[in-house]
Image (cartoon, rainbow, N blue to C red):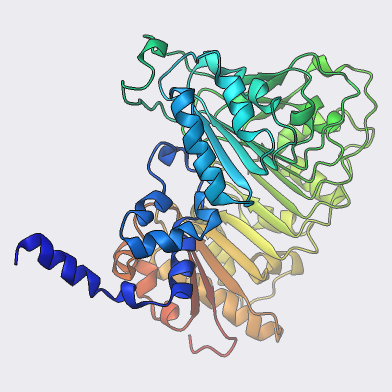
Length: 478
């Protein structure tokens, strides 16, 4: 018996081949879950890999419509080759909402039949997300041109500038050119499809509108700009007027950039306070001045606001904003701000009577912990909130928390809970970031010393990807 035959026989005896179909489906659904990481945009999909393992796996995968819902539309392919593949994918996906990925690779121009081919492929499609991963400046009009071919808007639009990726030279050699000019924005003209998309997300690029009426009303409910590969230098500007004058249904904004005035929308557009806003995440709280300039009340009142996050802030301006908006329930601070004192934190939290979750970087613990262990002394109520907030999350992407720091933090929170005789169970979350493969417990314990503490052993622990959540009972023997 040769080696290959022996390997096949051994593989057939693997436990996974004896699992019930329902269990296999659960495992496969987890494996094929769509992730938007642009670094994996051009790699083979898990559904393709799993369906080539064996006949049994392939039959299971063919009965999972969601496994085939992610469809690539590479602009560097010949459309005559691509359209039959898309038709086959759509047949396998059945009526499941589609995730369409358009990418240009290192091709700077496209053939004239791309727009017609996209229309034929997706005109009547039920699209959950339409994602553009574009490298080249010459592609800045492609999102506008392709979205106009759709008969109904997708639920989400993603415009991403990925790290520069090359493709095989066998694809459309006539379309390849030398040189590379990075894209930094996409252009949209009057586009009724674009105006009706609920969720907009930008990664390392921004967007510009031309020919848009100052009376335009966009149906956006969520707007996100985030930096993924651009760490410095380029700081894109997002139109204040676009968000606050033309998006009356906006509920969530997340901007890792800056807000600027854009006169293209006109100065006579009537301003209405963003009463629907529930979540605001900004690079710095001072960017809200762009909003305040439009409002008659400064700072403006947002009655629905529940979540507020920022990287940088001026204490006085933040306290002023929170005093006008005491409805904030979740408050988060990014890693770029210098540490704050306990008195400053107490002043901030004193403006948040409904606070249920507080997030800050691990570097702040050096200033905050000395006061957190003063639980035997008299502490005013605003300062007490610092370590009695029900959900405390600490971002420790640089592995700064030692065993000693961890145990002091846990002791302060648990003993304070016992003194207050409260029934609210306090929790601590550590967001450690995707620094290593955390699938193996041994890797975690070697990397994070606080996991070797006996306090960790006494906790109820849940890991969700790179977030560790811990709960302790009030009578825990610490």
